[in-house]
Length: 191
Image (tube, rainbow, N blue to C red; front, side):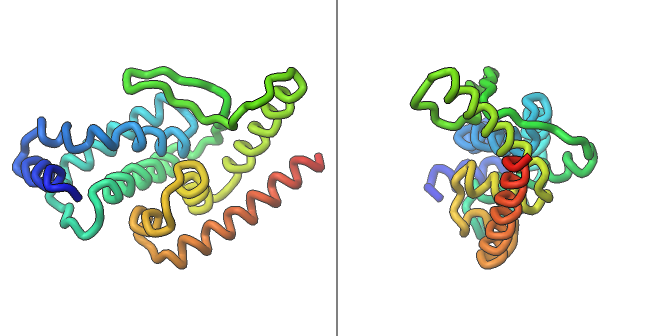
């Protein structure tokens, strides 16, 4: 952590709201992206992100500095998403090709498109749907590790800190999640 971040954390612990806003500002977009990818809905992601940031503000005194602040923050966001999913057990489909504009900026889940022929575009859209549908069928444990590793690009160590489990457990979950995902996608392609 930088000296500035350490100072902002200490000032936030004293109740300085401006310092807290400066502290979380660099992490808000990624926090929202994690929530959006886990929940698949713009409004829910906004609500859960705001709820998580309020939790972070209220519990900033519990941050001991044993991990990076960003890891602690993303852990709270991830857990808030899991809590929300448990409370609202409803199936949602995430579409990779939608672009959402918010006050924080544009958010888009996409598969790179190098060829824009109608056939290729249709094939990609079908592939996106199949992948997202398969991800949505995974268990919460598997869905979160796939999102954190394969979509958000966190390292095994970072995921281990976010989920508060060992790196070995993370690697095992990712392996099982990818295997389940492979089976689900294969079944969909055969249908």
